[in-house]
Length: 134
Image 1 (cartoon, rainbow, N blue to C red):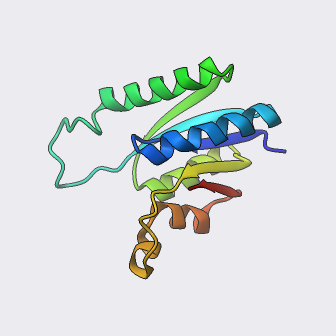
Image 2 (image 1 turned 60 degrees about the vertical axis):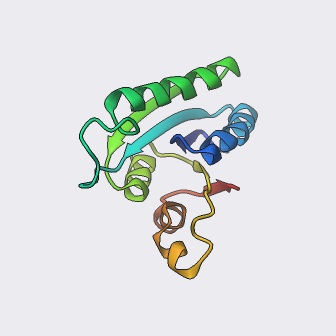
């Protein structure tokens, strides 16, 4: 049913927790798994910031890839710059994803936060179903 699964990863606890659900679902459906890291450039951020440096992103994807490999799951990785929600949806469309799986930080629990959350935007813009792992 889910031939291609897109899993946007970041350094959050929620992303790490969602990995278990991704593992179970990908194994069950024998899906292709694509890991995505999106870096949103900001004007306030000093160049070479540790969280968004090319090395940090490469390390994040490498760590995620090895965690899935330990579970017997081959992955593909994609790195992109841009607005996270739009980039996630664009990549999902490009790779013809059947499902996006995301962790949720719970930042959109207020009316103001809901409109601004990456999760909410992805849900509204996605070209495929989105599974949110709380």
